[in-house]
Image 1 (cartoon, rainbow, N blue to C red):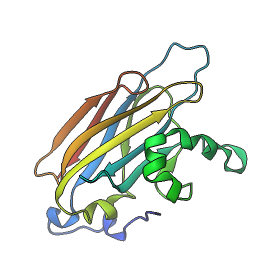
Image 2: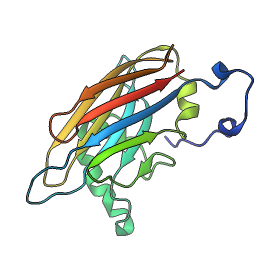
Image 3: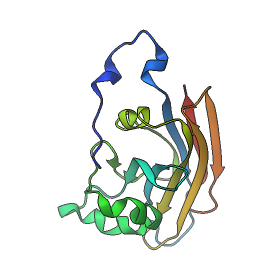
Length: 171
């Protein structure tokens, strides 16, 4: 599924509710003390109550490898791959990007705005999965209500490959 930017993002509207809500993801990638460190590949997506992917938010992998060879290891993001990855062509427009170094990062999702605005109200789960070559794998889930009624910071804590994961919601 390819996501495209919505022209409505740049247009001022009289009502804030007409634009829908905003979602951002703050995550910590810990510096691991290992002999062979590789930056983790990462996928973030939104699932409905049936655990079906309703929005691919981010897929971070080695986008600079020649002949798109970085996609070879994307399959190590096993949960994402089984639920959505097999059915998409990488790179995903507005979703794919380069891996990130250890530290805190904030990801915003302007390309997913049109998809998020079309979601029916209900209970969803934001899933973040990280996998490293010659390393581990971890997934963190953050339940949320969409659309949010008020500004919220919802969080979960990873154990090894991910640190703090915070979902920032704004109505």
